Image (cartoon, rainbow, N blue to C red):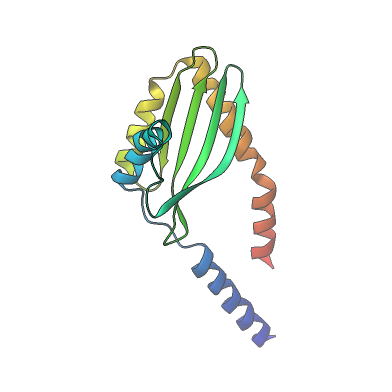
Length: 150
């Protein structure tokens, strides 16, 4: 019994230390690339920022708005640096580029300030999309909890 408990603790510790390490905070350079550099890359046909790549998280439409979320990933550490949100108003044709930073309060406040400039219908659509996405994660969270309880 003691050896099984020891083995379980070793496996759990290895899992947590390997997969659950806290990624480094989003840097100002990474934030600026998401809110300005990505658009420049698309419009001017430039190469992707060296050492990074994007992976699609979701692309959802709600009402007159569409939201494309992409993970901005650091290649060297294989970790998410931030989340890029490309929001489009299908009624007006406006496109907005926002960055959801990680563990950087100043940049998070900048993100919230950017969102405050949106009109109420766009904010409501964004809240619906984000709530729906987060709700879809519940089965995965439940499975993870079951694994950790074993």
